[in-house]
Image (cartoon, rainbow, N blue to C red; front, side, top):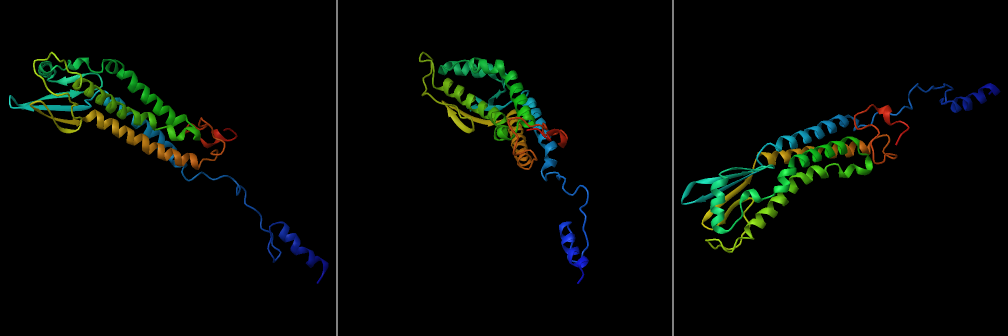
Length: 252
């Protein structure tokens, strides 16, 4: 075997060749980074965040809760609707009945909450959209919390006022009944009145907004986990979820 043949194989191997002496050249761009498999979800995250905020805004103008009171003298029942800014239905008639058992006027419930409700809804919407869009991997688990706090806060505040009104009756009232907490869900009883309470459209719109936020948060976690900058990402997303990929190259 000649010296030429003996040196051809090592030369082939050192340049990516094979045992037959052929050299295989690498294709241009072979080492470039591919698009992460969850990168498609960036726009859906933004759309879900916008949908969540829109549903919260619409819920502001709709009733959140309905109460009905039934008694022999009111066979058709009395209706009361609760919204974020006030009450509707047969409020005056219910206030007259409440006076006889020593309960305060319905207008006295949650005055501060009703006054600031518009600002609260706007704040929840802005914070939700900002967290969904701009927060980085470190804040990823927190993006849906403001949205979840919206209807939960309403439920907690409503229960507080129902408890306060039913357990702080005027002892000088003409009719004496035992302290009570009106039912927020389903059937209940207050004196001789049977009651029924149920969530209304505004509440369900807010719940739908929370669902949008939770789905968006899940997709966002998948995007962040597969992002090319996942290891260096801090509190802010350099791509704001929807910017081109080159926006985060060389940044945190």
